[in-house]
Length: 266
Length: 283
Image 1 (cartoon, rainbow over the protein chains, first blue to last red):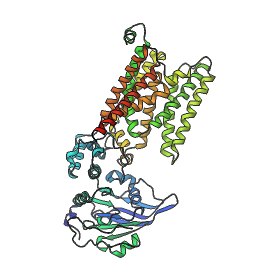
Image 2 (tube, rainbow over the protein chains, first blue to last red):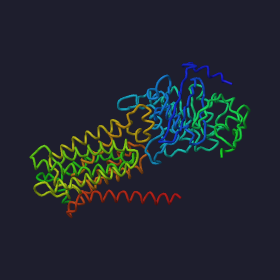
Image 3 (cartoon, rainbow over the protein chains, first blue to last red):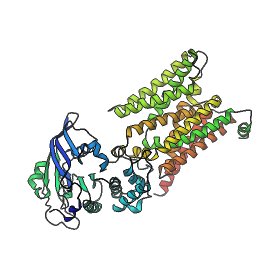
Image 4 (cartoon, rainbow over the protein chains, first blue to last red):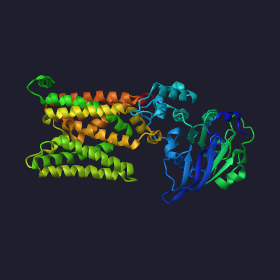
């Protein structure tokens, strides 16, 4: 099942890119993650799924060192999350910002180049990288536009471009298809598919339709974590994670042009 | 208006020239730092810092007269109190889990109360009104030099860290992941805000100073798509408000600080009404 292009990921092939070892985390007294252990290899495209409130975003924030685990250790890119964080490109789930915030699309993408100098002045190379990332995401013609004037899908692409502008070894995308319509969602999925050819991408989603052929491995999170190769995601597994009434999504057959649909998790 | 111009050019009368120069210089800091304050939505924190300054002024007056400490001018007291308030509020808002606004309000009022109490206990007559609402007659040559020094310091730092400040105000979490010490920049922004407030205290006073932070930047925000545009427009607006306020108030002997703020408020009201009408027209 592994696409041939993955052989180009020569960097640290087969080294674990993200390892959780017996990690637990609680907000106040509510345990969000419980004794979580898993390991993801660098040459894989990984998808993190689970119900809302199941701890997906918490898992990502732990991996970025934005939260500290109560128990256990996390290793990212061979080191601690704090030391690894500048090598990770991150796209947050919610960006709370002011519609009138006076910032252009290029300004936002350039934020991915921050931290390279004392005063944060951008070099010619920084601007090239940022423009290239915007081009790659298909929003290269919007550089001068105010960020607040973009549509939801355009904004998601700019935020992915900002993550790419970091020139990361690992891309962490938290719900990249949230709040976009299905047509835009399919475009984004295609773009992410292309990205996975050159870089390790970990995508968080509550949408199981996302778990398609381009994903090698699925990390299912609902307080506990289970890892499966995509071929093993059967109805039983999904029921185990989500609990209860759920129709199975098959990933080993072809989909229609608009992608496949499935029942919402009730 | 003629009276304003002739006084301004009269070599023997200095206070009006000092007031105008101080106001124009301070406008640059208000344009730059005020834009950050407005986009980061911390005008409330700026308000608290401004009111705490009265405590510093009161303490400076009290200790300098009581114990004859000549270097402790009201301006020095204001700078120390403003920076202390900025750091305390900044650290509280970084570490406090909840009820941040209650703590800020508490500092706001106790700072002010301390100022009034110090002034009441200071020998000789002190008019708190001139600190609360400004008094251009009190601007000395020494004040002007302090303003020049503080202003250039604030504006230089504000412009130098433009990219980092922009990123921290836009998405603090992402900036932190890029290795930027976001807490440092947040505290730096609050300290720059504190020093900017001190610049205008002589002209518009502690209570009204917030108007010059938020109103020009709010108007400028309507016409800018980039932060640097917002800074330039609000600097120019602030310069216009100060000049117009001084000119209008001089002849009829109106309080100049209040007049400046009134004109800024009018400008804001007109802009917002204009925006509303044009939006209705376009559907």
